[in-house]
Amino acid sequence: MCQATRRVVDQVHGEISCSECGLVFDTAELVAPPPPLPESGRSDGSGRGIGPFASPGSPRRSLGSTLSLSRDGQGRPLGWHRRYEFQHLKRVMQRQTARATEGSMERSQARNEISMCGERLGLPPVVLTESERIYREAKIRGLFRGRSLPASVGACVYAACRRYSLPRTLGEVAKALGARRSEVGRAFKVVHRGVELPIPSVGMRAFLARYAEELALSSSVRSSVEEMLDEASKSPELSGLSPHGLVAALIYMAAERNGERRSRAEVARVSAVTEVTLRSTSRLVERLFGRSVPPP
Image (cartoon, rainbow, N blue to C red; front, side, top):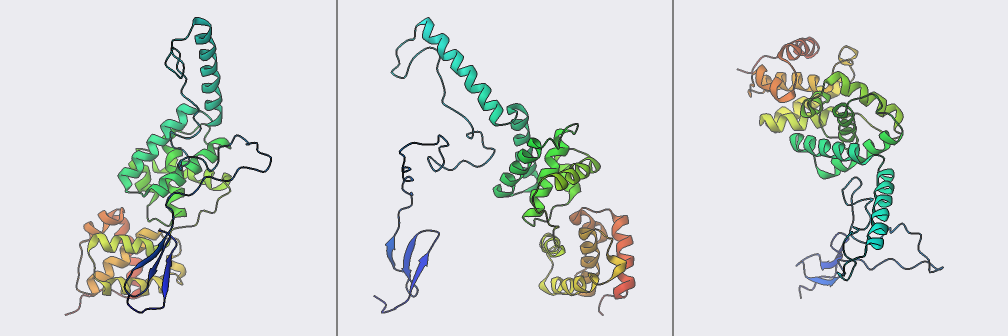
């Protein structure tokens, strides 16, 4: 129609469209066909690839059929002997389900704590799913023995945030779960050593993007802070400071230099640090970059 010769393949929606006018030439099936049967014709009983996707830790996972103790599949009443058999099968199913989930009560409570923490911190579902996976692996390895549930859940949530480079501090996670920061920190060290997963540190630029958006700073202030971050990473005097505290001090100084002054209390509230910490870090930053003087 538009005489264009280039076509674009959309891997997400499974469509082939024109690059100029957007006309869709071919569409794919949204529902994938069922997996082929194995050559032997026998199933391994895992059920993989059948049914809708169930995320790890969801209540629909590791559950069997619902057995009724009064009627059969056609709705006919059962005799006393059949009711006894189904009652025995139900007990066996519950026992096997509890073993597969490694403790159903603790698992359910942990999932509720993770969901509550995700709502308070505004975490995406993929981070919550990763938190549940880390919690399950750490619990199987016995890393949470003798530790409280909020501290264990906080360690897993903080580890998931670091894996996805989300700027959340350890104090924010502990406050969202009502636990002490020291307990969550000790539990995180155990998870970091025991679970064989790479847990990188969150970069300071992630904290910069978050704080600058909450403080409504301009792009010139952000670029100034980014330049100072590159210089601060090479300074041995600032190597032992916390990332969010250093970013808060640089934002406070760059905002004054660019005429977009923010109060020390406002910056401390957004960055979740105390005013005393922000004042002491600002002194070190001023010693390195010079005193911040607002332009005339």
